[in-house]
Length: 415
Image (cartoon, one colour):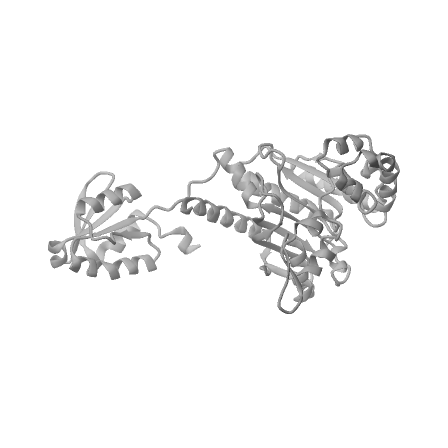
């Protein structure tokens, strides 16, 4: 609906603006990608690749997929366009529709809008802290202050295999008690059992070893520095050893920003570090970190808390012509005013002055310009101030000056 679309445009504009404030540039990628990109990037054993992708065979017998997330596409574009050649850290953001074949429910849709950032080229934990601070800043700027930031480190290819073996030793004796999904995942990706929502599986993992106890010195030091940087900028967080996220590409830092009024789907955004993803996609070893967030969930939270901005722009002027000659005279004036950035409405049904004033009042228009035969003959227009009912005759050529005195042109037009 138009009112809701206006709120979406406002939120989209704010997200774009905050990303630019942090030095991120927008990158737009196709909705379709080769299926192999997501199989290699996200991981063939993930739920997304196994069960949730919309995959088709095109006329050239190629397997293509509607993008289920943004990171793999950004990495593909980063490599394809050799963005690393510019040197430094490539700070990129995206916004657009994503698609997952899953049962629609509160906070989850088969087509959803997602925004996110990717910082490619640095392993410095300051980048991790910046990305987390950026995510938190978006929600705080919108009035959502009671956020819970969960962080964890899931290690790297050096130390994670050790934790994997400890986890398997703990869980294998209980495989018969697991849900079918976890039984299937156990040998291929046992870390995914940590975020299973099945109550029995949760019980089985209550007393498992903590992954933070098996981190190598590099991963442990990186995590400690991240926490120091977050402490230094006043970002409060909770270490959550069960947080692993749903993609195979994550290494070291993972995090989620959570709101309490979304029910089971309570994560507003999530992300982490993926230092091996670019190499997995055919590029040189390149560290990276990012996050993704859903616009629909953000809208749900803002609505539930009455924080959704009222951003519908009302017309600034309603032109009320009386008769054919007046309509012909006002039409080019209306077009010129709109082209200059003013929000101008007019009657398109040939109605009476009373009906036009009623329509203008319903729209909340502050000024109405009435043009009848006498005004047209004298090159004037009757300006009616709807809040006071005061009226004044002014030259038609003074319309722009009157609008400038009372309003600014449309902000959206000039942004």
